[in-house]
Amino acid sequence: MRAYRLAYDGRNYRGFQRQPDVPTVEDAIFDALRALGAYRPAEHSAVDGGEVPDRPRGYAAAGRTDAGVSALAQTVAFDAPDWLSSRALNADLPASIRAWAHADVASDFHATHDASERTYAYHLYAPPADDRRTLAGSDEANAPTSDQGADSVADADWPPVSDDRVREACRALSGTHDYHNLTPDDDNTERTIDIAAERDGDVLVLTVRAGGFCRQLVRRLATLIQRVGSGEASLEKIDRVFDADPLPGHEGIPPAPPEPLVLTDVTYPNVTFAVDEEAATSARTVFERARIERTIGARVARQVSDGLL
Image 1: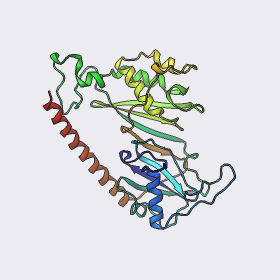
Image 2: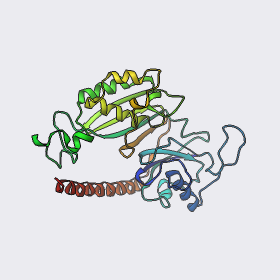
Image 3: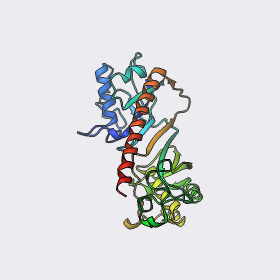
């Protein structure tokens, strides 16, 4: 058995898990294994908990990221031939999915169940309350003038936040709680979570750690933290979220957009991944190219937006 670390740009996929008729990360992995002649299919088992047919033998993944969510350290494991290094796997993967490290693991290793901690980062656009900005950002835009009033794009859609209130919200939302009001899941919603926020210009990077996550939990946490930080919601809203009663529809917390979310780490006790330097260099090149393209795209959007003033 071998485990692989994968980085991918989630914008190109309708999520990680296979779905009919839409591109997913998992489909791309399986297609690459077939093209390489490294696909060892699982045997069908009628026993509960047995292997699922039409998957590689022993296959499991650390998590099922949603459509649009990216990853630095998604982890998959399966029965792989000895020659299948990270760089060999990359030979038939799309450029937007890169293996960059691997580890040989025990035959009973399970990438889902053996993970002790998962870490996500959410990049939340949230200008500081004491330094109001327009949507373009601090390095590309001037603060709104007094005659722009409260109808600017930033005021309407990305209100400034108080970092103190954000930190209070992170503390209140951390710990062991039942997060049933922050997920569409109906059961297994109690989690022990640690949340921290670090400012990077007009962006707050929310780092969220837990042994496992309910569906959409990180994205709904991001929405709630933004609302508390901006003053749209009070800190008492968090107490209401943890109440046993479900939130009525008009008080619900919707998920924030998926594109700013990244699966940054998955921890496995006693497993050490060896970085394949050639594969890692290839991955850095791919994502640096994506960064430059998005930077240019942001400048183009800014010029068009400024020209409409």
